[in-house]
Image (cartoon, rainbow, N blue to C red; front, side):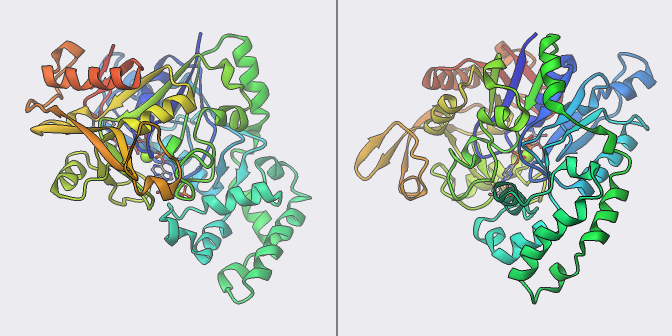
Length: 437
Ligand code: GDP
Ligand code: IMO
Ligand code: MG
C-alpha cells in the first residue's frame, strides 16, 4: 500500500484539498506536515460517509462545502485517521472552532485527529506581532501570525503542543516569550495585557477536550508504515511559496515541498511512493511577489470570476495568469513529482486561444529554467505558445475522451512539455468531476 503526497505545484489554492479528500476514501491516514490556518482547503461533497450512512448506503446527501484550515481534508472519511504533524503551527482556538464545526456537520461524530507533540502553538500574540512588524502589509500575508510563530520555533522560544501536557512549566515558558515581546513593544497595550498564568489557565481549559490526542505521531506513522497502511500527506501552500525554494521573501514560513514530509511529519520522503503535484490549468497567486504570467487585462477578471478566484481563508481576490510551464518544470524537479493533477480545466472554456508560457525572455536571452530570485523573476517576460481554445463546457465530461479535442490537446501539450503524466484532470469542484487517466 503506497504513501502518497499531494503537493501544491504553483502559488497555492490549486485544489489540493479536493484531491486529498478523493484519495482519502481509501486511505488509513491523512497527514498535514506544514503551515497553519493560512491554508484553506475547500472540499465540496455530496457523499459524506457519516451522512450517507444515515440516508442509505449509496444515496448521495445534499451537496455540502467544507473549508479545512488545520484539520486534514481526509477528515470526512470515518476510517481515516487525521494527523497534524510537528511541522505545523497550530492556533488552538482555531482548532477547537474547526473541530466543533466539523463535528456538528458530521452529526456529532468526533473527527479522528491526533496532534504531534512537536507541533508549535500559534498563540494570540503572534498575529499582533505580525501586524506590528509590518510584514502583514509588506508581503500581504494571511495575517494569521504564521511568520512570527515559525520564527519563535527557530529562535527556540516557541511553545509546543506537548507543553500543554506539562502545566507546571507552562507559565515559565510563556513568561519568557511574553517578556521578550513586551520589552520590544512596551507601549502596545494589546501585548502588555497577556499574563503567563492567565494564558496558561485559558489554554488548559480550551484544550481540555483534545489534550489526550497530543501524542508521538512519528511513532504512530512509522507503525502505520510497518503495517502497510495507506497514508496521504496533504501539503499546504505550495512549492513557489516554500521558504527555501519559493519566491523569497514573498513566501510562507514553512517547507511546502517534499522535504517538509521528513521535517514536518518524521517520515522520510523516500517512503513516499507517489508524489502528485497539483496545478491549475492556469495560475493564481494571492499576496505580493513576482508573477511573470499574470494577466493585467479583462481576461484576468474573467478567469477570476469564472474560477471564483477569491481566497478560501481570507476572501482576498486572487491574481490570475496563464499556465507557466517554466515554473512547473522547476517544481517537478524540486518535488520529484511522479505525476501532475490538473484542476479547473473547465474554467478555460470559451477562450479562442490559450497562451501557455514555455520559456522566459530575460535581459535579451531565453531562459528555460525558473529563476527563483525575485530580482530576476520580476524582469522575466514569458514566451508564450498559443493553443486553440474550446467553447464546450466540461462539466459533463466523465472520461478523458469526452473532452473536446482542443482540451485533450492542451493536456497532452503540458504532458510533453513537462515530461510528466497528467494522471487526473478535474473539471469542477465536485467529487464526480474528475477524470482519472
Ligand atoms: P487548496 O488550497 O489547494 O486546497 O485549494 P482551495 O480549496 O483554496 O482552492 C481551490 C478552489 O477551486 C476551491 O474552491 C475548489 O472547490 C475549487 N475547485 C477544485 N477543483 C476544481 C475544478 O476542477 N474546477 C472548478 N471550477 N473548481 C475547482
Ligand atoms: P493553501 O494551502 C495561497 C500566501 C499569502 C502570502 C504568503 C505569506 O490554501 O494553498 P503567510 O500568511 O503564510 O505568512 O503568507 O503566502 N499564502 C497562500 N496563498 N494559498 C495558501 O494556502 C497560502 N498560504 C499562504 O497570501 O502571499
Ligand atoms: Mg487554499
